[in-house]
Structures are given as structure tokens and as C-alpha cells.
Image (cartoon, rainbow, N blue to C red):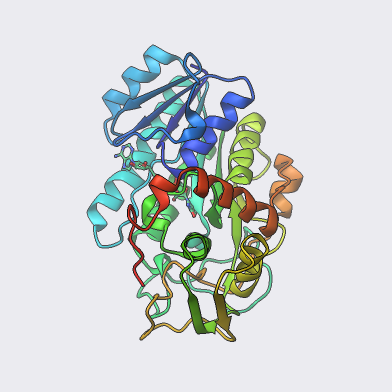
Length: 339
Ligand SMILES: NC(=O)c1ccc[n+]([C@@H]2O[C@H](COP(=O)([O-])OP(=O)(O)OC[C@H]3O[C@@H](n4cnc5c(N)ncnc54)[C@H](O)[C@@H]3O)[C@@H](O)[C@H]2O)c1
């Protein structure tokens, strides 16, 4: 196999598909492997295995057997309430991915997050060399940004950066903004674009007097997969860390309009202003990005040749088609609405 992908979740499964489309073969590892529809029928090009990224011996055995040249490390654990597991999987798992990349001369693509920027003020574009804001204690309206998850991503990046400098490793870190699109994990189906689309499909109203001006730095997962592929091809890019978002950010009211272009009868509307932090049926967490600043992607465009193709209309259309096709996975019977 040419490429090893840890994590067959949302980003990992789309990355696997991208490499296969480009003519590579992939071994994908996950503690709880899933096979979304777009990975069907790829026998011979894809092997999916149940494996734990915190086991260096198991991973090394797979590397010895499969002889990949590229490692895409997406496996992650998000639940901020389980800090020890967050550390174990996100930090220790990354240290293992790095050490194995060094021993076996692999190119490593590390999936980082915009959450590492922490608590920032202002509205201007956010560049990679911005000084990070505090992560702790979380402000009442922060979601993942003030938690162990963000901290683990910072540590992961720093460990990667150290390996790049100390050992000359071919490694890059992609700081993803808020990803949406085909193959999204269950636990995200009640937030953001997913929630609006699912409500519209079943004909349920979502009418709230607030939130239309909430700022969301959305990026489509197919564009993310493309950035991973391009980063792997460059190997050791000029810089280490790259923002991966779309050309511009959107407001939640624009999401509502984009959904209505596909389902005109949808009873969706948001009033003006930000999403409040408390006392609302759908909490702000998961709806808004932690700051009002768009992650500028000019560095990724210049160094990696990244050029996202999905504006909100195109991205939501693609996602809508996938949800309809996979309604057994996305319906409220399978993943109940929380409000
Ligand atoms: N989705 C987003 O909006 C987003 C935004 C910013 C950054 N990211 C980053 O992108 C990467 C991928 O995220 P995702 O959205 O695909 O998450 P996901 O939850 O959909 O997938 C993560 C996968 O990792 C697997 N995993 C967890 N522990 C494991 C272990 N010990 N061994 C093997 N596999 C294990 C899970 O089973 C899951 O399939 C992560 O590093 C995340 O931090 C994602």
C-alpha cells in the first residue's frame, strides 16, 4: 500500500478516497472502522483494518507489512470531558505517528485545527503566524476552543514541528476550519449545516429570533481531502503549518439561504445577531466558530497549490445529495434531533 491513513472517520475516509482517485492504494486504520458509501467497490486499492493508534507495535507491524510512503494522521478523540483519552490518543498517538515516520522515512500529514488559535478578539483575517490566545479557562460561549482538545492539538503541532527541525522529517500541519460534507460523523449531525439540512428535509421548522450573524468559517470536506493530498505531494513544504478553509467565511443566515435554494419550502429562519450562549434550545456550541476571524488561506494556496472549489452553494448541494442518498444514516430516527 502507498498510503497509510489513521482514522477512517469524516476526514480520514475522504482523504483515503482522494488518494485512491489519484491512483494510490491505501491502508486505513481505525479503532472502530467505518466504510462510507464512497469507499465501496475499491477492493485491491483499499484495506481497512481495526487498529489502535496508541499501540506503536501494532502500527509498526502494519508499516513493515504494507510499506507505505505517506502517513496521513487523522485519528482523534474529541470529548473534552475525557481529558486523559484526549491526551492519550491525540498527543501520544501523534508522537507515535511521528516516531514511526522518522524510523521508516514516511511523509507525514498531520491534521491540526483552527481551535489551536484559542481565544482571540477582532474581525480581521487570521494568519498562521498569529500569536495564540489563551485556551483556558474557556469563556462561557466557547465550544471546543477552550478545552483539552485544543490543547492536545497545540501539543501535537509542537511535537511535529520539533521532529521537522530535529530530524528533517517531511511533515506539515493542516489547521482545518469547520468542515462539512459527505461522511460527517454522527455526533456532528445536530450542528451547523447538517442540522439545517436535516430539518428542511423532514419538513420541520427551525425558526429562531437570533443567530443569523453568527460567523462560521466553513470548508467542504472534499477541499480538505484535496489539501491533504497536495500537502503530501509537496512533502516538506516551505512552511510547517497551513490554514485550510474556504476563500471566505459565511454567516449562518447565508446557510439558511443556501438550504432554501435547494428546498424552497423549508421553514427556516434566523433573526439578527449572534447565537446567545445560554437559555436557547440549540446551544451555541457546535454552531459557531470560536472567533469572528476567517482563517486566511493564502499561504496554502501559494505553497501547496490549494485551491478550494466548493463555495457554500456548491458545497451544500453536494452534501444535500449525500444525505439524501444515505438517509438511513442521517434521519432523525437514526440520529434524533436534540431540539
Ligand atoms: N471535522 C472538523 O470540523 C475538524 C476541524 C478541525 C480539525 N479537524 C481535525 O481533523 C482530524 C479528523 O477529524 P474528523 O472530523 O475526521 O474526526 P472523526 O471523529 O470523524 O474521526 C476520527 C476517527 O478517529 C478514530 N479513532 C479515535 N481513537 C482512535 C484510536 N485510538 N485508534 C485508531 N482510531 C481512533 C475514530 O474512531 C474516528 O473514526 C482530527 O485530527 C481533527 O482534530 C477536524
